[in-house]
Length: 196
Image (tube, rainbow, N blue to C red; front, side, top):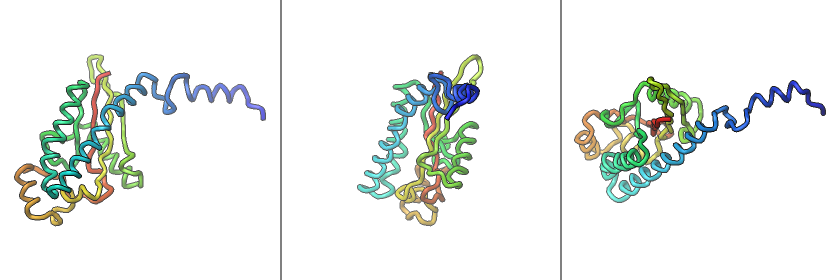
């Protein structure tokens, strides 16, 4: 089989040397890989702590993990990296820390569409380079937080929660909107913003 020189030139243009397969320049691909490698290990730590608390103390036992331990882990990562790292949701439990900005709102809405169209929530993510003005750019990255069956104990339909748990949530989160989820839905996302 003979390949024409024109085809070879066209193929060479599709994947410039040193670029990732998606066309991302190598410095951005490396920054994204570093972002994932640094931030994503937080998720199993938080989930593991919540599962241990639920097993030991019931669903209400997970509230301090969500309210204190998870933010402490995120704060430690922020101090270590200098990046903005947080959990956000369209139906946030704590509006003071979980309210998404405009870019995050768009990504969360897209995550919901992607999940509704059959994409596995645990595989949904997004990234972009944002011009922050003044010659500054940032890398934005979000990873969907899927609703696992254990999450429904605190995030399922309000009528399915026990009276003690509803009381604890109302006391600790008076503006709580993080209810009514079903297993497999996108509950929110881990969001990272880092300067480039």
